[in-house]
Length: 98
Image 1 (cartoon, rainbow, N blue to C red):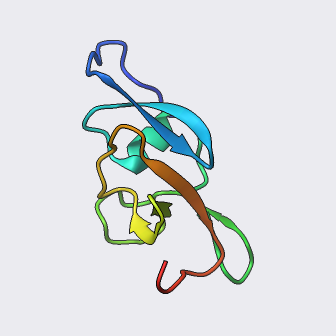
Image 2 (cartoon, helix red, strand yellow):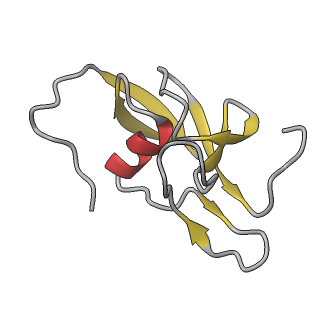
């Protein structure tokens, strides 16, 4: 559904999603990098376990929550990628203190 423009010549950054290396581009947000890589689901809901995707891409809806470098409940649409960043897909309810 999403793919990068062939004209995008920004330097690549390597991030890790659930332990798997993903190529992102400098300046991408976490959510944009994951969408471009083909990984759609960001988290699952606490009640039904339904997969959620980024919706607003501007920090309003909270559907893009992920754990970044050990800190949970981060809005992936607001956090720019950094070399070596460790991202975990968040499953279930939001976790306090993580």
